[in-house]
Amino acid sequence: MLSITIDASTFAPPFSNPTADSVYLFVERLLDWTDTLDRGNARILTSRSTSEVLIRCELYPLRPHIRRLLAQTGVVEYDANTIAAVVETLLNRSTTLEDAFLVTDVLASQLSFSPDTFSTYSPALLREECQKCALLIAILRTHADDPSLDNHAIAVRARRGDHVIRVTAILDILEHTRTDLGSLPLPPTSFEGSIVVCDSFSDYLQTVEETSLWQTATGNQDLDLAIRIALLKDRRHRGVGADWNGLPRFAIGGLFFASVASCGSLSGSGLAQRTLRAVVETIEHLNLAATHHLRTGAGGGNPQRMRDADGAWRRDIDYEYHLHYWECSGGFVELASIVVHNDFTIPE
Image 1 (cartoon, helix red, strand yellow):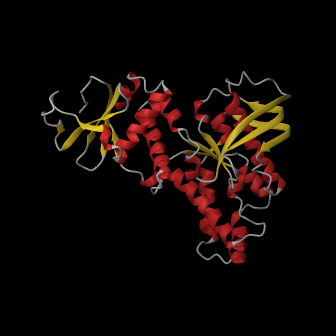
Image 2 (cartoon, one colour):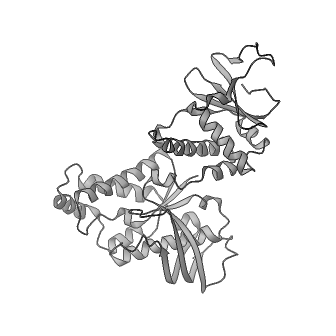
Image 3 (cartoon, helix red, strand yellow):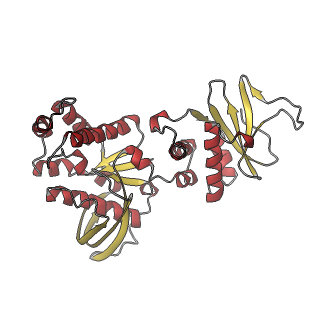
């Protein structure tokens, strides 16, 4: 499951020399994360202290601040009630970081980030809250035995530079109820780790390693996610319109995962990459020279195998392994199985 922690700054209305563009960007980010939550594309987390920090920074309740902001910048496309309702929905429906990862608090000194995405955050209390969340995630990514953290990122107000930020600190206190932090020395201790940051769901997807997702898959749902990310990245690489919610339709057959696991595609990164490449090309109908009819017999004159109006096809992954799939009458591909060189069967 993809997961993102939205830091408190994303919910804070722009108040330092605001412009119409900064208001539009503020609302655009909120709507983007709401859409992500509504579609179930990722688990959304927020700090338990987000509302309290916004109140203490005199930025919450939002409605009076947003009314002044809209009047000051001349933005008439939105109203204060609608924007505030979006923020409240995100805060109410998101999972708390502390509950999700069984951490309560962290205190540290000599905390630094490189590059320092948080240096422009104000007031200071807002900056400190976002830095604390970032440090907690960095600690867990470094020391916890939790695969869900492999592709976890922090959504910040605006990403500047790299997606990866180095984090160093002297840990003084870490409160948690986890059982997998045995490699973390008892505080006080020096710490060095990293976090991944993004500023939108589309930006976040660029940080997810699809091959890693494929190799840690436990079923077709995980393979589906890895394929979608591979499709998105391929479309961007080719300069084709890349929208997560507008990717080409495809289906995964009921026996596909078992065939992927049995051929070793989950364990070898080279084969996993080649398999994903073949799947993307199949769905996008690219490199058609590597495809052949899957026939009813070994002879070249045998007809193509059919399933009602669906045609069976075979694509080369490499010399040893091949992808079998159905070109469906509905205009989409159904991935059927990964097979070895002399296997010409296909699940129906």
